[in-house]
Figure 1 (cartoon, rainbow, N blue to C red):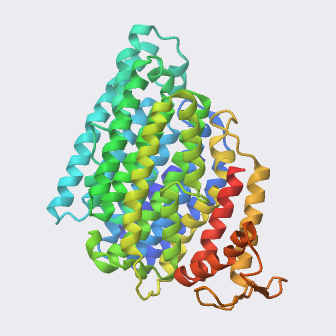
Figure 2 (figure 1 turned 180 degrees about the horizontal axis):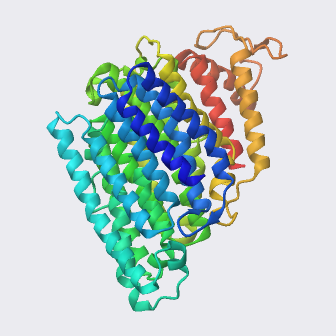
Length: 545
């Protein structure tokens, strides 16, 4: 079954290279149906053979690949206007390579597919080959990742010679002497850092010359996470020496701070997202290197969440860039109007990127903070500082994009392909489904996230949304003082309440100012924004409980 899926993806690549128009759309549509249909049967597999390995780590990456790729492919049908055959052919080869890479248990196939991922990345970054900057960015990415691949090749050769086998699981179980593991561990560490754009292999910001669907698939959800896959797959070897996890933590924190500071001063909107991706990858690298079950759970939970909200952000921003033909923030004022009502989806994904409730980013970042507090409080200080910078540069983005402008309609193709990212980020934020099904099998169930609290949050969220959209409120002006204030409560069984401010004194007068304050906020912000803020505050309070 595993080999048949790989060959089918290659077949889709061949067909998309020669078909065009309606037939190309049919091929892309069939590929999306195929990936979604094989996803759940694949998630039930758990075995290891001479050539294939399908464990919880592989399942996590397969889920990311096959649950994100179909929507990006549908999005690309509308977004990519020229050279569609070349684009989809390369994309399908990349998906097949990434799929084969995470299930390979043989070092030969492992390295070949690892190499093919970089080749596809180079071709997609320099997709617009007439743009010298795109070609230069593709070359930079290819050269830096090649350095890492040479290190990985040397490490794999070392391990194969010393262990006498080319099966990865058997190599990891081999009782190899201490002296024979040092250089493979060092080279594997460097290869993982290079693939994920961790200092000194910083290629990701320049890779933003690629089309937005490429940035969403490769540079937020799949390819950049391949370095994390190598790190965790060979963690028994890399972690055998305390020096290498320590080096990774130092380099990761340096990358984190540099990325946040660069994003704060950047004006290119895609490069801001790239720096944000670098920062999140650095956080995951550093957390995994704490070498505890809690840290591994928190790291992979954030990997899962980050892949979804960052891929969605790239797609949303891609629409804005596609319609406005601008990249710099100063030229994008009020451009969220291009998204129509889906601009609220963009706002929610930015909320997730800032790790604020009720998004999925809040839960995973909270787990990371908790683990760093227990293991190394100094690291927690750096993480909190980076979060403050993150809120600052995303806040600047929101203030520019969401200036009051007349909303425009959004094509159904875009709406259909963007909605799953928002829904999954909300679902993984108010429930523990992502952790329970994909992270918990990798490590022990150590996070204190229980289904009863999650179900309570879901029910309360649905009830709150029901009240927001079904209630009717008579608008009222701001209270200026002196006159009687009449506020009509939402029609949910409450009668009209008349409040006389001279009737109460002391603490009662303070309580009486709550409706007055809400009325004033409603006048200033608008009814929907006030209700959304109150709902988020309620969810935050319940999560803290």
